[in-house]
Length: 165
View 1 (cartoon, rainbow, N blue to C red):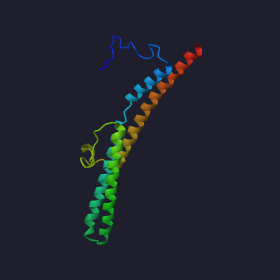
View 2 (cartoon, rainbow, N blue to C red):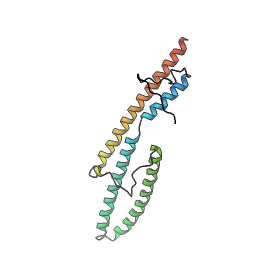
View 3 (spheres, rainbow, N blue to C red):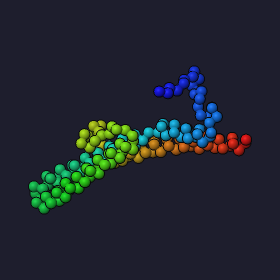
View 4 (cartoon, rainbow, N blue to C red):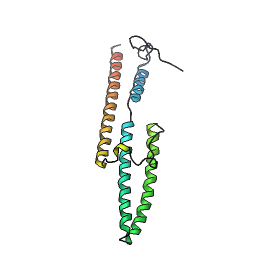
């Protein structure tokens, strides 16, 4: 297994730029390192909490309809339709969870059957969940912009160096 060499001053002795690698390799290497520093986990987690909050509201509405069913026989047909819709929604959420887990590259996500919502967010509203999603997305976007600005700057430096040669 490769272990990077550590030096007292912290400078990597064989970095692509220092050993004279082609500029495209240096920029691609920096791009790869920038992507490794950016995490989508907060966005994914916020979206998962929101999905679970929506599901909880859905379940509460379904329970309320079941209670009203005693008073209204016509409601029974509506509840059956709601149950069918609920099953479809459950399948869609499970498919979404699989996609989110695959996209985040982590095999450990919360399953709908395991946890309806995070314990700390049981009393949070849908609005608060949406707000957390957008805040997480904003931070993710800021990190991405910073990483790409650094890459653009490096690319321009390399281009300027080549133009002077």
